[in-house]
Amino acid sequence: MFALLGLSSPAADGFVSPASAVPRSRKDRESERLASAVTGLAALAALAIALAIPAAYFLSANNRILGVIEVRAQIYGDQVTDIASQNPELWNAFFADNKIDLTGLAIAAPDYEQVTGHAPERRRVFAGDGHLLLDVAPAQPLAWPTVSWRTPVLQNGNRLGEVEIARSLRPELVNTLEIAIGSFTFGGLLLIVLRVIPLRLMREALDRVAYLSAHDQLTGLPNRAVLADRLEMSLLAARRSGVQIAMMCLDLDHFKDVNDTLGHAAGDALLRTVTARLRSCLRDSDTLARVGGDEFVVIQPGVRLPQEAGALASRLIAATREPILIEGQQVFVGLSIGIAVSAPDVSAAELAKQADVALYGAKADGRGQFCVFAPEMNVVLQNRRAMENDLRAALESGGLAVHYQPQINVASGEIIGAEALMRWTRPGHGAVSPTVFIPVAEETGLIVALGGWLLGEACREASSWPFPWHVAVNVSPVQFRVEGFLDSVRAALAQSGLDPRRLELEITEGILLSDTEETLTILEQLRALGVRLALDDFGTGYASLGYLQKFRFDKVKIDRSFVRNLGVDKNAAAIVRAVVGLCDALGMSTIAEGVENQDQVATLRAQGCREAQGFLYWSPMSAQALHGVIKQQREVA
Image (cartoon, rainbow, N blue to C red; front, side):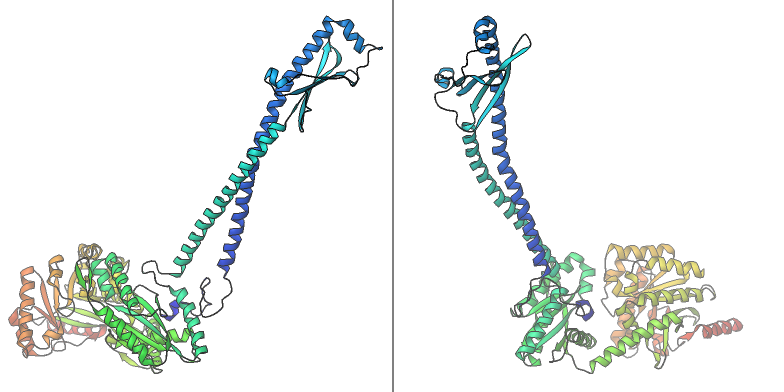
């Protein structure tokens, strides 16, 4: 588990511990730069809008007035031309070489706006050489700014002079300023809106992203990145204060069974309920994080004695031991805890490793309890990892072997098949029991490769046996659930040429805990191939008659724990009789394993059990030894 915490890398960005002054994170700096950019863009947009409205109005008003005075200048010019045409003597008096000089003559016009309803305007007439001839101005001078338009005075195509009309833009300018005040007020409000809302949304989004990057979405607990940082900070604080911290690795017992049986939604509900119960046992200063599917970590600061950590672990275990109601069903889970208490010189990675080792010890001791790390536990972990490495090397180098234990017809005593059993002679250690290395292979996932290899070897070997001998091969729940298992069975049959009816797969009840359509579909597909299916170790685990009702197996294997007590315990005989009778009624055959004496055989025969295997008949043997038995039987025959 400690490798999953990321403790070998620097602490995650964005986490600020109250125990120390942490510089602004990169996320904060990026947030500030983004806020500045948003503010700048909002200001530009608001300014553009604030300027655009009054500017558009002023330009529109200016163009409108220009259009008006252009028309009026044209009309005035036409009037001057008419006067010149109708009174040429008068016109020549002003425009001839000895013309009358009226320069500077100004005529005050009446209140034009009151008379005509139009804005005041100034009219001027210019001679051809440009000097002013006539200036008709309103009583009050035109206020700045002004706009004017000149139109030529033409007679028979000859340019006599020009007329000019001018008007004041003061009213439009005042209106523009009033509009600008409103526009800039609107722009200011727009700036606030454009800045505040996007920034708020941005900060909410960044906060949400930061939260999701630091917390588990299902439970809301801190994730591995935050846990790694808090562990580092807690260790620093512990060194300064002279106290210790305790790190606990928590693992839910039987969570997978619930998840597979009731579905992932029920599993999620279970995790949320367990999280609430764990939180109720912790102080505000404690940290609870989820680091895996059913794996949690607790950091308990301020620990002065290891017993304090043990007391908290006991409360956590007790809290999860109570039944949990999910979808109307009571669910029971347990909790295994590994505890490591910090030393002055221990690193975060080493502390996490110690807690992980302690968790392994708690599981090995029977689950549902806690275990405090001790230095000698490292030896156990090292041995386990060494076994895993050696087992992997054995698979790659051909260091594994398959032995076969014959299965017997109880009535005739003849061999009808054999069960394939994996054997491993570990260099420097000798023969290793399957009960030792198979659990290691299942925990590490190596069982998938081992199971595939065993299936291929067993089919290849069985193809040379006398017909109709069959070969029985155990299937691990881990191997069964891996995608591609069905393809591996097809491949083993195709490569060996073995008749599918001679292959018997022994399915444990652990596989059937995953009572899903997918599980039943795979079983049906195996049957469609012609493969025979046997329910292994019936009655020892989560045995339920519902399994036999939902899926019709070809054979049921009576566990050795019942066979061992035949002739000694009446209850054992009753159980065997009930199982055999039930299987007969359902059209299934039965086989008893672990048969070691004739009394057991007699009882089995009396109860109607047709097949058996055990040391009374044959011990597991190599393929070569089994061929010797086959040869011997042929010679006898």
